[in-house]
Length: 121
Image 1 (tube, rainbow, N blue to C red):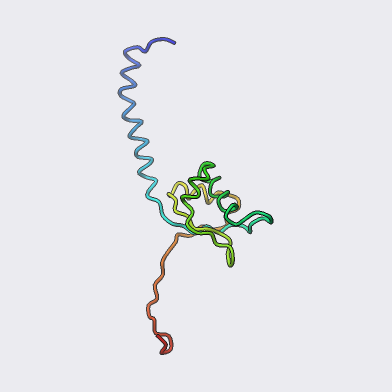
Image 2: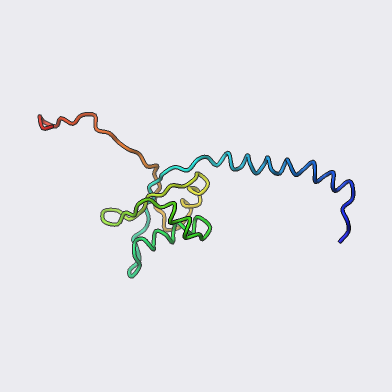
């Protein structure tokens, strides 16, 4: 291996801060995590709901089951099949591309406008 020349060292000094700025800008544009509802295909026979959902989420999050467990908030299995998870916008885009995912919606809290229904409070 040849020792670095003055020109290559100078180039490295000039480009290194630029590479760091690009990486920081990419992280900054990702945005903060938010909670989403992820609707998926029915769970295959013989597989638990939690394992199925963790498998989908860990595949999207770089095969990290620990990261998937930390992101997942709740599993839905009775009326719908899906889960809620807290993920960044870039992670959300990868989740949407999973073949088992049917729909993704942002989580929202809805409030009643009135608690008086036909005179019953």
